[in-house]
Image (cartoon, rainbow over all chains, first blue to last red):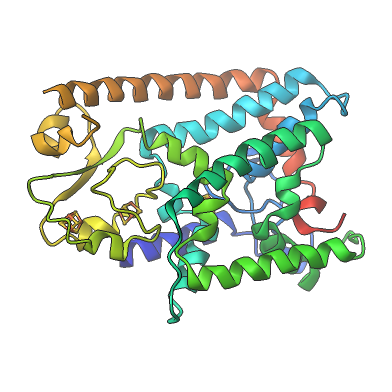
Length: 293
Length: 52
Ligand code: SF4
Ligand code: SF4
Ligand code: SF4
C-alpha cells in the first residue's frame, strides 16, 4: 500500500508540476501539452503540463462533426494519436495507471478512507462507463460539436473550475452562470459518493477507465489466481478498491491492478507479472488455466 | 496446456497491438495529430470549467 500511495502522490505532482502559474498567472504552453497523460487529469488545471486523453478524444470528434468545417485529416490524426497513446500504455500494463497514476482515482480512495458506513455497488454499474464512453464522449460530441463529457466532468470542475476561480489567470474568464453552479453540484454529489462507495466514478462513469479496462484482456502484464491455493476466503475483495473477486476473472476489465489483493492473500494464490517467454513457469500451470478455459 | 497456448496467443496479440499503436502514433505526426491535440490543450477549456 505504501509504495502505491507514494507512486500516486509522485504521479499527481509529476502530472501537475507547473507551480510557476501562481506567479505568472499564465498556463503552461510548452510542447509537452500535446502528450496525453494516462489518467483523468483536466487540461484546464493551471498546474498541469499534459493533455487530458478524454478531453482530446472528444475534441477529435468535435472536429469530425458535420457542424464543424474542420480538417478531417487532422481530426482523424488526432483521434488515432489519442487512441494509440491510450492503447500503447494499455497493451503493456492494462488498467494499471488507474491504480497507480491517476490523481482522480487517488482522490476517490482518499475520501473513501473516511470512516463511515459503506455502500456496496451492484456489478451492473460497470456498464455505465461504456455508455459514457460511447454516448457522452463520442456520439454526442460528434453530433452536437460540443464536448459534453467535459461539460459534466467532476474532475474538470475540481481541477479547473474551482482552481481557476480561486487563482484566476491573467486573461479574464467569462463570468460564472447557472451552469458553473450546476457543475459544482455534480462535483459535490460525486465527492460525497466517494466517501460511501469504492471508486464509484471509476467503476460507473470514466470513459478512460473503460478503455484501459478492455486492455486488461490482452496486455503483457497479467494477473492470475491459482485455484488449488485459493480458498475463496474473500480477503482479496475486502481490500479491493473496486470491490471485485479477482478469483472470478483475474484479468477482468474492472481490475485497476493495484495489487492490494496479491499482498492480502495469505495463501499466495494471486500472481502477477509480465508473462513473456517463460510465462508458464512464472504464473504456474494452474494459474495459466485461469486464463479463460 | 490449452490455457498456456491461449496465453501465448494473447501475448502475441499484445505485441502486435503494441507495434500497431506505436506505428499509429508515428503516422499521426504526418497529419498533425499531436499538434491538433496540443493546440486544443493549451487553451483553457471553458466546457471543462463550466464557464459556458
Ligand atoms: S477510471 Fe478512475 S483511475 Fe482510471 S482514469 Fe478514470 S478516474 Fe482515473
Ligand atoms: S484472498 Fe486469496 S485465498 Fe482468499 S479468496 Fe482471495 S485469492 Fe482466494
Ligand atoms: S482485483 Fe486486486 S489488483 Fe484488481 S483492483 Fe482489486 S485489489 Fe486491485
